[in-house]
Amino acid sequence: MDDHRTRRQFLLASGAVGAGALLAGCTNDGGSGEGSPTADPTDAGTDGGTDAGGQGTTTESTENQQSTESGSYSVSMEPVGTVEFQSVPEAVAVYCPGYADMAVALGHGDAVNTVGQKARYYTSYYDDLSGVSLDKASLTNMYQDGIDKELFYELDSDLHLVDPNWLLNNFSGWAQSDVDDVSENVAPFLGNTIFRRTDDWHDYQYYSMYEAFEKVAQVFQEQERYEAFASFHDDVLSTVESNLPAEGERPNALLTFGSGDQPETFSPYRITGKGTNKKQFRDLGIGDALEGTGIGGLSTNDRGQIDYETMAEVDPDSILIRGHETKTEGEFQDTVVAFMEEHPVASDLTAVQDGMVFRGGPIYEGPIQNLFLTERFAQAYFPDQFSGELFDRDELASVVTGN
Image (tube, rainbow, N blue to C red; front, side):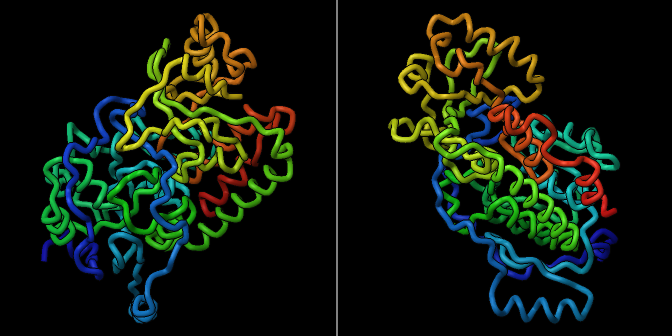
């Protein structure tokens, strides 16, 4: 047995992955930079599964008990099933950056060796947390005009924290035999596509952000750190909920993607979608401006766009525009919002006149990023209630660093 297999000795205990058939003409997730809907569709609110965590079967519980006694341990997560570990993985391949953020939150950011696209992994949040960092420059882009199976051999990871069905249904050239080959000859897969809920092929259990986070904590054997982080998060949400205005006084929002400094057309999302990328809006009680309008949201099947005339028919209380996370809020106001204020139709929108047009946030997010995004939108939407920092940075840093 070669050295790298001796180092990890992982066993995929559940058998073959139930990946389903390849979808003809499906859209891949690469290529066009920051959050383009053509390159990275997100959910329009379709559930397609439960939101419960689940801890595996009765036989898994028995196996876990036996594994604990032998020093190994197992983690179970749909769609792969149960993966047994002989030791904590030291090199982990990630596609969705939200899983990388989970690793950082658990003190294992150094284990992450790749993400789908580094340009969509926003790490500036870590700058506010003493002792928390990730060397983004050292990461490899998993997407390079597609995803080459050979890259998995080159990375030589201990674990692929990637939903294999994401690869099978979004990237040409991938078949079940490729997933099996990488699982058997490099390392197993473990992960669930949670950032959206609109994929027809995702006919198995979904996980909320913290349900998935708990699974990742089991992978890294950081259950206590997870519990501390989850408790911190719950305290923040308790503060939010106790200070929010009455439900009838909260604004609705039209969440869209609009590229460029002078956008004329937009791809709508649904605030009511249960993907993890809209968690902060749900927690703040922001309503869905498209509710009851008959306008769908961006998904793998719906590529419809809207213009300012359609926006005028909806006339949302606020507008959230994705695709501008590399801008500061000031830069966004000076470009996109300034253009809308001068536009003959957009200038009449209630949201534009009331100063309620904001950057829409990233498509992928994890627990650290989510806390900062919750604060950002709490301050934007409810400045009278949330004028200062929503949580203590030093306290959060101490949770992440285990101090």
